[in-house]
Every structure is written in C-alpha cells, then in structure tokens.
Image (cartoon, rainbow, N blue to C red; front, side, top):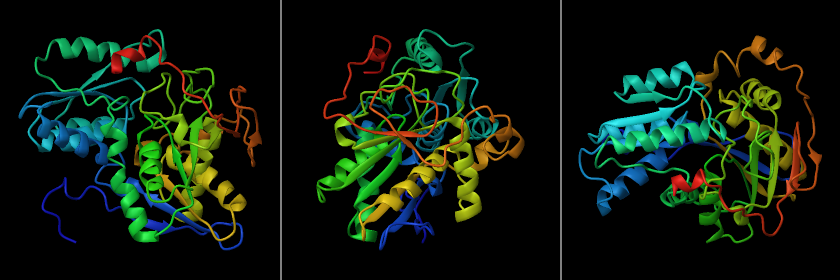
Length: 351
C-alpha cells in the first residue's frame, strides 16, 4: 500500500505463523518488528518525538540527543532527521559497522565513549550524554529508559495483534529498556486480562536479579542498569540465554523459518519454541522479533565466530531456577510477586 512518507510506513508489520512443534492446537506467530523501515524502535521514536513536538518538550529544529547502540539510535535518526532536527547519538565501541554507517548516512553525529565507567558502558554513555546536553541549549533527550511514552508506543503493536488474531494468550519478548514487552502486554491486558508475558534476557544482565557481566556480547537486550520503564509486575516468567545460545538461536531462526534476525530475535525464537511446547492446548502464542540480521554478519551469522564461543554451555532445554540464582546458560524462573528494585545513583540521571 502507498504511504505518504517514511514516518507513515512505521508499524503495520507482518505477523507470520511459524512452523514449530507445539502442544495440540497451539498457534505460534512471529510479529516481525524487524520489518519496520529500520527496526522495532521506529515506533518509539515516532511516538516520543511527535508527542514532544505537540506538547512543547521539543521545539522545531532543536537538537535531539539519545544514548543507544542499536535500534533506538536508528529510529531517532529516521524520525528526528526527517523532521528537520540535528540528531546526536551517544554510543560505545560495541556498535556494529552497519549501524554506524546507517547513522552517518542519515546525517547523524555519532559520539563514541572510549571506556566503561562505574556501571559499564551504559553509565559511560549516560555521563557523556550529560556533558553533551550542557553544550546544546534547548536539546531534547527522548530518555528511552524512563520516558513513559516508550511503552505507550507499543499500544499500536497490541492493536495490530488484536485486529489480526482476535485473541492472544502468551506474549514472548526480549527486554532491554522495558518498553516493548511491558507496553504491548499492558495494552493487551486492558482487553484480555489473562494474557501471560514471558520475558527474555541475557546472562550477565542485571534486569532480573543477575550480577552484571559487561563482557556479554549480545546487543538489543539486557542492561547494566535497571531502567524505570521495566515494570516487573507486568511479567510472569523470565528466561536467560548466554551469548552462544542466543547466536545459535538466530542461526536456527534463519535455517528453520527463513527469517534473518539478530541475536535478540534468535533469543526470542529459542524461548518461543519452548513456550509453544508447554502452552495450554489451543492457545495462541506470539513472539516479538525486533532486529534484522544484517548488523551481525561478522558475529551472530558467522559460523567461525559462533565456534569461538564454544567454551560457553549450549543447553537444549532451560533449567528451572529460583529467582536471583546466578545462571550461565539457558535458565528460567517465575517472577516473584514483588520484584521491583530502586534504581541506583547512576540511573537517577535518566529520569
């Protein structure tokens, strides 16, 4: 269908039924957010920036500054520059060359921190962002980790699922800022209160009671800080995968479903298949697939690179553990009734 401009082309992403083993009558779908013009965070960028323009938080032509190493950076670049704003992206050396090339092609200024600080790369980026904001009067910071308009933007995703399926019983999604899975689940539950939410994280991320390991190689999920937009009370179950398991999941996703995704999509696919096997008969299970694989041709989709991770365990099934048990391979836990923690001093800067 024709679109009036690139911003109108955001959303309306394909919903594809997957061929996977499952419990009797279970339908399994992939919501291909990776089919947005750049990736999943295009939804967030459009909603946050246009809302800020409407309420005066962003003035026409003012700079926009954000911390991101992936899809949020691309979304801000697309929407911000299209609407005539200078865009500054603060990132770290883990940024892949394809994303970096896209950002520069879209006429962004990219600022790369040189070293980790007290809470890893994330805190280093936030500290640089704070210094940069001081030099750009009137600059707008979308604050993807704390801005409630991040999860709000996924109400449109929930609406699309209801229009396409009528009923969703289980949502499976990766967690980084907390926006996509929490926002879409919250919106779905307004219509279907019984929807279950299964979160996917990486080993070495602090989001769900694990110790931080800044050596983790996954991008697009996990965090060294606890973002305010992550609402544990919305989520029912958490799965952690290590780097090798996530990367192998992406390889299987391409081989088995012909979907060329990144490590986040690979992690979701691995968990989605497990959920499908154990779902209530006749239920509908949806996984959110955020990222394309073109950013990872030299890592996730390189057999040689994956072989370099051979020292990491590769589990065929998740181990059931108590919440906050340190894990190093695919494991899952039920979330306690109350799991929210107070953010640390560094995270206070993102409020």
